[in-house]
Length: 239
Image (cartoon, rainbow, N blue to C red; front, top):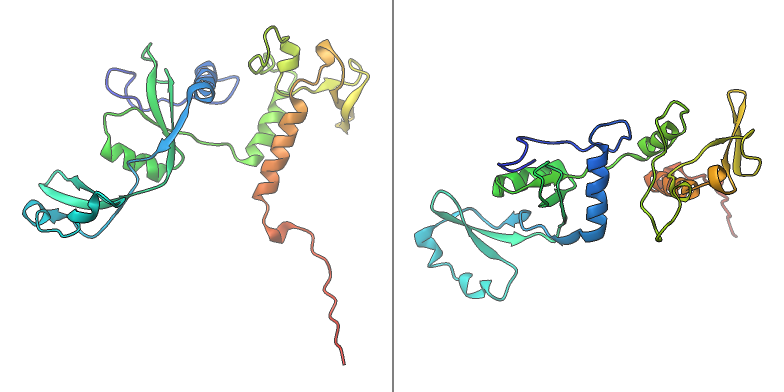
């Protein structure tokens, strides 16, 4: 959600090569990777007891221990005070221009709707955002979409070393077997053979194997112990 003075309301940056906001999404993710910092989320707190009137605050014996504890007092809008315990939850803060202001903003990112809603209530004029991650199935679908021949071009990551050629930085590469003779992975689908190539130039695999490895790990993390193959039970009865 962008603050006043920027584009009003909520602006979505979509991780889709065909979306107009993709360049802004990529620029912001790169900025977060370079300069982003994890910090304690001061908006997530645990209320301790009911709000206390101002005249009662002076008589709270816990005030003597507040300086030595993780508790704090926060003044509410209705002239009362709330005793709170800050959460240990973290949020990612990064600079960028996701709101289209023409100048970098310190945008605080949250991982859940509930955390974002609490932050909006406590800091309505602060630039806030929510990072929505793809599901493992969506990651696999996304990689499949990159292989469609009608796509406008490849998604290319940043240079990892000065002067690194573009073909080494392609996110996911599937080549026709007629164009690239050597392969890291070779499959047949719908009557045609497709492969992750092994070579140089147009037949360089880019970051294909790293992308597949990450997708495999995400799918594995999603499985529960009940999804794993089980061995038969052998019961031994001794005399």
